[in-house]
Picture 1 (tube, rainbow, N blue to C red):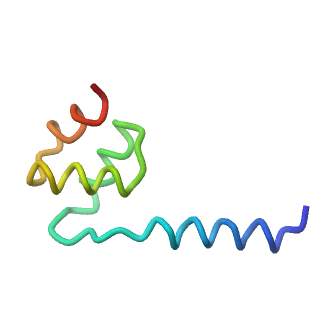
Picture 2 (picture 1 turned 30 degrees about the vertical axis):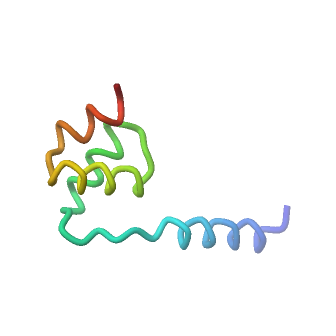
Length: 63
């Protein structure tokens, strides 16, 4: 395969993954992503919804 096109697709995916992380700690986002197995966007949304409560965010995403 043409590696140039593969790299372009990865870049586009990263751009689509741009998320407003204002008010949320990056290590909290990483933890929720890892534990719940979700995208950055879902992790940030859940953390914001639950005022940064990691446990509740993970529970919401996994139950």
